[in-house]
Length: 213
Image 1 (cartoon, rainbow, N blue to C red):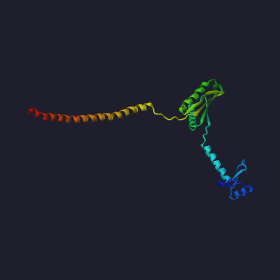
Image 2: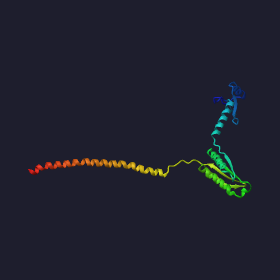
Image 3: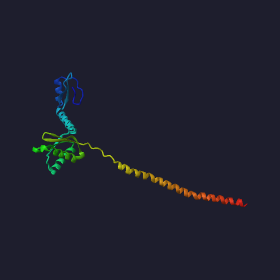
């Protein structure tokens, strides 16, 4: 027998276990009927059932439910109705649902299945990259169907033009310090040249008295 706090209470007879549970104003619940002897626990069974239902509800919320929505067209549908139905399809795809597009033929319309294929291809073209075609348009009795699924978003990559345009900027930025270094070296050479000339003159003046003597 297990107490309400999870402690082991040992082996008890059924009357003793029931009286102990009633004294605590709790329930005696058999949790392991196949064990020898069977294991019972003292608990608030109503609270236990409520917590279990709450956990099940949370798990259902986290679960992903993908359903199939159906949108019906006609071969001679007007442009306004066509645009409205396509907007519904885009909404369903953005919500993560698959969409079954059905086009129904009536009477002599069965003689021109290419009209139905034209309508379904127009739907696929207008939806664009939001969906991928899981089932291409196919004729089934008096209806033509097509199944679309939401397309996974692909991260946008930088174009090669951006990298090429950044290359000249980087080259220019690296070239500027080189020009500055060259100018600085040239300035040093120009300032050092007069010092060399003055030294040479001093040597010549100092040598003249020796020659005269």
